[in-house]
Image 1 (cartoon, rainbow, N blue to C red):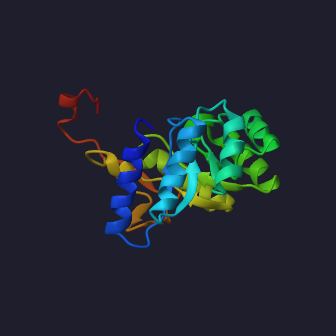
Image 2 (image 1 turned 90 degrees about the vertical axis):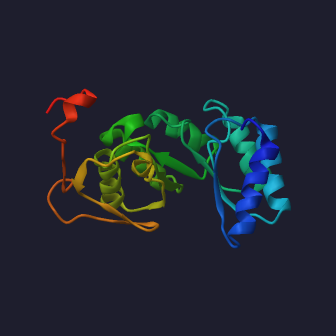
Length: 203
């Protein structure tokens, strides 16, 4: 959202290096309405495919989300715009999104289930994501996906950004796929190294 032309050039480079690739554009509230429309048009002009625009504008600007859906024809996912069931009602009533991004760190598990159920009943689609979390938290989100069904877009990859993974067991990454666990609960445990005190972690 800082430099639309630079964003377009980055995607064009990926498009050329990986023919046939499609993109989910996560604006993280960084675009204005005009910038998002210019971004979508720029991707279209080089032949790229945007399959989803996630939270392109600030959370309260639902009018712009409506306009972006209408003017680009690209599905929009509401992320920061939905931090509660009441937020979901507003977004859906106003026609501001095609997907609602469920994150348990925004709402907790129980309200996440309520939002997901309401979204499906309203005829919209579900996405699941997260903050920068360990595989314990992501395992909870993945469990929600497995238990509820109806989730079409999974964005549960932030544990891959961590320098190390102290979690043993649980779900695992298999290329672009997530493989579930078969043990009770989340099927995982945390291994704390013997020298953890040097990092300020108490065993």
